Image 1 (cartoon, rainbow, N blue to C red):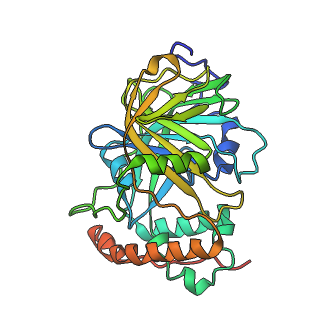
Image 2: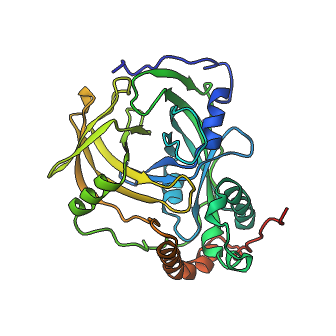
Length: 344
């Protein structure tokens, strides 16, 4: 472990954008871990698809308007983190791991523009997800394509040569005074209730997840109140939680609220599976923290053969579609149209 002040990489401090060699990692990554903070300051991390912002100065993720929880967490507390540690499906030849901490800006003041951007960007980055689906069916999926965008302005970036975190390649810090623009105003009225129920007991889910999902990532809260997400070299399930091992070049992590996220998806992105366990990290000072699990969170996983995936997706749509118009109305906007790109 180093002393908490990572070595400075090329270009650090002399530019208001991240080092150029990281752009390919950001652009090609199919999945990144996106971490936000709850009202009590506990991290919640979920895998999502990242995009380089339209100005090339932010790293952007989205969430459906009908399930806005992570966007609303980011609006309340803009301290967020994004971990790029998954090369599956990305055509990346390297295994560079990049941990980003930054400030979030939530964008939902123009739902039609958000939807147009997501339709265009997602179909370009994840073509297999909609390949073969009739266009008239896609146009009826406004409950899914209508999006809230979260734009992350990086403040601190660290990167390593692999998930083992054996060697730090560099670090970059934004110039003093860097700030993210304010989020769009919060909508009126209460946030919608959760639409998925969490599991009753976390242990059975944990045993199944350990057996199936190979990528494990730990999120803690650092001394500055930012979430910090790091890949786990090894994890061992116990009756109380997970004994974890971080790589030798990992930054020191603070004891306190934490979560462990596991996920997997095929090379051709047509579905994904994830699990998140929240609790408290103890014994964090020696590179082998222990996560004492309190509970597992509900998850939206769509995995397996094509037919079960489609059925699960449509069942989710039946539950989420009725929320679309009320959520648009809370923002004083009509329900957007799904406007598909013209065929080339």
